[in-house]
Image (cartoon, rainbow, N blue to C red; front, side, top):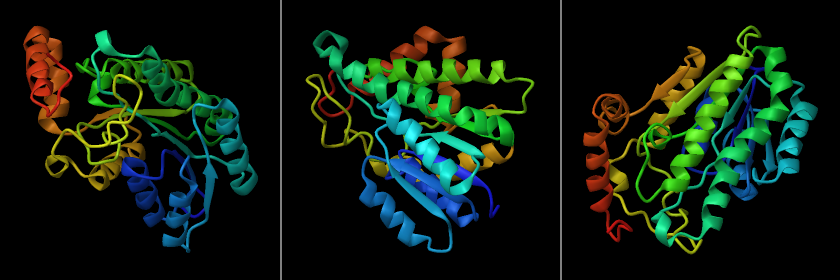
Amino acid sequence: MQNKVVVITGASSGIGKALAEKYASEGWNLALAARRIERLQELEKQFPQIEILTVKTDVTIESDCKNLIDKTLDKFGRIDILINNAGISMRAVLENLDLEVIRKVMDVNFWGTVYCTKYALPYLLKSKGSLVGVISVGGYVGLPGRSGYSASKFAMRGFLDSVRIENRRSGLHVLIAAPGFTTSEIRKHALVADGSQQGETPRDENKMMSAEECARHIYRAVKRRQRKVILTFLEGKATVLMAKLWADLVDGFIYRTFAKEPDSPLK
């Protein structure tokens, strides 16, 4: 894999960081993107044997995404995998929500995926590589108090499915990865009704799948060129399946689950 190149957005923490470590351990060259460049540089020092490019990137800015792809091509000359992992969450009911929160979540999760995919696509087609979107179980079922988050993940799924079909004859591989609850910083940085950051996670992170385990599943799914991977059994696979068969029952279960969270915005 010495000449293979993977681009990972949101690589400074959580699933993105775990993916960077996994691909580095497998000998891949890395192009890592995030706003917190100092964290990316720490990863660079962790794997001196690997060629790593770190690019300060705000995926809500189209020119930043183009710059990420341009710098990757300048350094490595190719792209084999793009993993759209950068994401942000929110926690508030629509009734109380400043709509700017939904716009910001859509800008990061959906438009960041669109921008990076648009500029990387010619090179992924050339390498017959893999385009990956890290969504969420919230991209299959609506999550109360996370309307903007679920909307952005549904949008990512529809976008990536369409890109897959458009390029059906080209050899492009598209994977949609939907983790259940996974240990990361996303809940700490989630936006509340007024747009400020939540600061603390409302859930027990120790009971969640680790970011490292999630990264291993995604790595294997890319290697096998799977269309999708839904992670965790009860929160993931079972919820998505049951939502197709017993939608109202699942709606009630999800509502009760989220209503039990500390300081839940649900009445």
